[in-house]
Length: 463
Image (tube, rainbow, N blue to C red):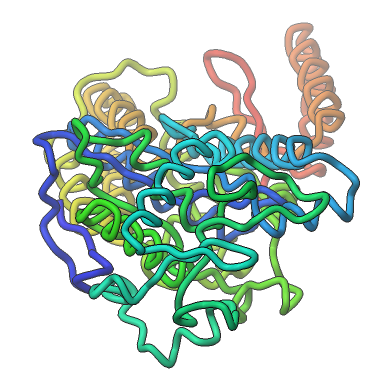
């Protein structure tokens, strides 16, 4: 397995800390609002990474956190009059439901910042004791000058950091960041020997990794991942505070997915084009979105456009049309050469373009064989097995193929179509073939194509 490491800024061989084990930590959302396409892209990228390691027979521990205490959450509390728990539990559940719709599995561990207060307080006490953190009137800050490797992860220049950090005259250095914010009236607060308050953003991830992912007390993990927007300051600060507390690097490798743009414009709320996932899922099926968002390499910036999505769907349609040809057939073994080729391409830093071209080739070859001999059972059985394996490694192709081609049809429309199909079946049974043809014509005018199979009449919406 080769992966692109953000620190080394090159593709390197992945060497696990412990043989055949991999521990992956992904920064999850701050749960004050609905998830957008950027959240979806990151979740899908590292869901694919997780599936690839599982396909390579690694024992995978996959952790994704939820930031459930933050300035934005407090602002939402003040605006809505709702409690922290009401807001965060709602958006955590909404996020998880939407990720499942995209075929993203729940993480093995899903810690929340508010569940790690004890560890956060202990971490800060250790830094204070060694004068690597200091107290001001409103916060406890980490002293970045105590870390000679600071900015070694993001490769930022000193001057470039100024616009990304909060100015404060009490800081020893303006790059210093808050580990703990002392209580203000009406804000959530947690007890601490150095003063009641709440954690800053960066501290939580270091503490949750130490709490949930240690290798026999040595808590360096294999891979820390997240969006490129987190590289600085979030990941840089995580790495720095952990180095200064433990003398260890937080993660052996760092991976980052690219930005999402909409029609060429970077997605951001300030631009007014933040594309909420809930809105996308009202228009597009979750699997079709998954296939589209996975179709570009995870490190590349992704430009979302409806035109490209529809082209991507046609590619997925071909896989499902093949599935219809072999559906409900028996299975044999997955083709060894195909499986190896796919795993080899994914092992090259998740080379999805080559992977999908291999899937396209498999689909084309199977169709060619079945065109020559529609009753070719060995091809049908092997193809069925290949498709089932693809479901696991890529998370696509898992639907009933007939239901896939009914996506976008309302339940009322389906009921009407099935009623007409039943009437047609009854007409054929009584040998009223004129009536049966009339009913087929009615369905054809509705854009419905019928397929009479040994298991009954199936239908799909003609695109």
